[in-house]
Image 1 (tube, rainbow, N blue to C red):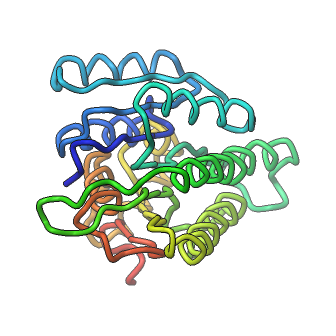
Image 2: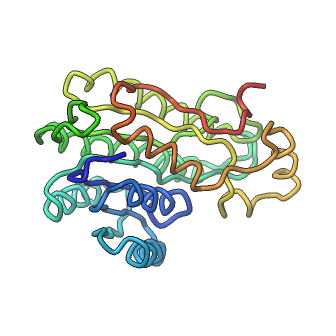
Image 3: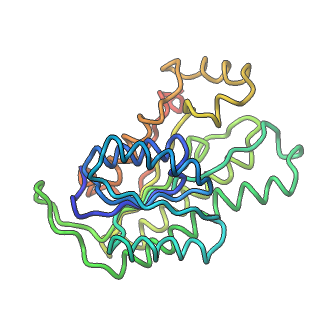
Length: 263
């Protein structure tokens, strides 16, 4: 559930989880969405779906490189210029690494992964917070809960608190995302801003299904649910943390993994 006057800002909106999140937000009542991605074609696909299924939704696509500070600042400014504010931020964009231990990964691979998985999240969160701090809270909704200045959901991973085989750099990056989430939740709760993370397990996306098939088969066998999550299931959880049904939750990392982490 979302305030009808709220504005969403979703990175990686051209990918599987980002697209599903845009759709779920629209389904739950968000009518103004800024979608960010490096892929113009991905954003066009998301825009096409929203236009067809949710004609009342205004979708503002922004093609950019999230690792460049000036471009992130521009995207936030464009969103505010277009829609007037920024209320529901989802920092979803990220990349995986090759299945190799630390000694097998090159410095170039390290730099690319950390730039997207950590630097981009930091830059987005910095400018999202700066905007949220300047705006009045949304009006109280029909649940009779006070409005907030904004909510942020960072997409981390179960790798944010577990050791994952042959994924040391990815694991390190997602630990960092959870650390940023918890620290900013602590610093900005007094300002009426909530910051949470979602920690998915293995998802049915091209990122996972294009990997080593034998490895993927072995991973699925270790998941108690015995299947991958759908992007829509992850989007459901993001919408819960971002929306008005979680107004007393901040600084948490919600695990959505089919039971993988409880073993």
